[in-house]
Amino acid sequence: MAVYTHVSAEALGGFLARFDVGELVSAKGIAEGVENSNYLVDTTRGRYILTLYEKRVSADDLPFFMALLDHLDGKGLAVPPAIPDRDGREIHELEGRPACLIKFLPGVSLSHPSPAQALAAGEAMGRMHRAVADFPATRANSMGQPSWAALHARCGRSLDDIAPGLHDDLDLALAGLSATWPASLDTCAIHADLFPDNVLMRGDAVSGLIDFYFACTDIRLYDLAVMHAAWSFDATGRDHDAAVGEALIAGYSRHFAMSDAERAAFATLAVGACVRFTLSRAWDWLNTPADALVTRKDPLAFWRRAAVYDPALVQRCATLR
Image 1: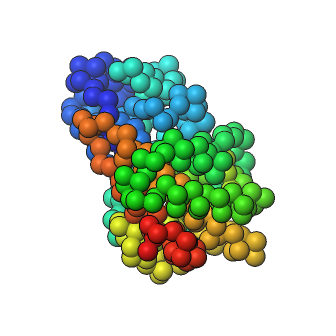
Image 2: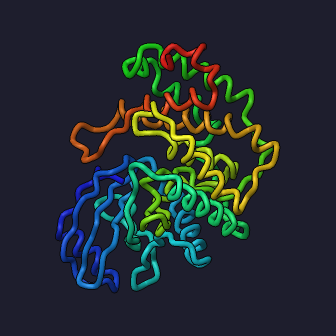
């Protein structure tokens, strides 16, 4: 989450008047994350999240995201569906951006999850994948494996401003992934971004899964690989907590036990997750406006993780040594 687009109190009050949510009491921009503009909104009737969708989120994709959240909410999962206005509309426009008023979920995001919390989070992902078995809508992964080479090309040699040699090292990794990507594995609707800050916890229990704006139809196990790479390292990507990673897999396996083919492919999927987030973070690092209220993420913190999943990369990539 972040704030790129600023919303005045007057504009926000007028927006809220479309809903049966009471009158505006206060609003505060949320600086975490990098994708959309988000505000924590308190009214006389409760607390909500206002999300304005920035350039990376296409307005054409919002019906898929909202339908997925409504589906999961209907299955009893703790997710934040959009609040409909008095006419039943969930998707609106505010300050020239598509916008939704979102249900607020209690809980806290973790910086250093424990194995017990990881076990619960992995089980929550498995439960989510079970719940989408009858979800009919599909959406191609706009940040999936076929898109990475193009994003690498868009970043270009500016990648070497982040770390000398990064451009060529990522090019090498991309070639390997293109040759080995396990495209025949099971697919379903996935979250594709279930980092610790997108899982709300109360103690060791999951109280919410949030921020579904990369949700798509892709390899089911890739979702777990993204989660594994996000949860089982420290913020720098240097320290790997194997116990957390094992707990994620154990929790997930309560719903989906890995096949032999999935076990063999997991490291490749995890390297793919590392490359995907290295590239998207690099693009944001190179292109985030100076005046945006947003915390930029270090691209190298994800690239370093690839060495755990494929130690041979260390010998071939100078930026991993």
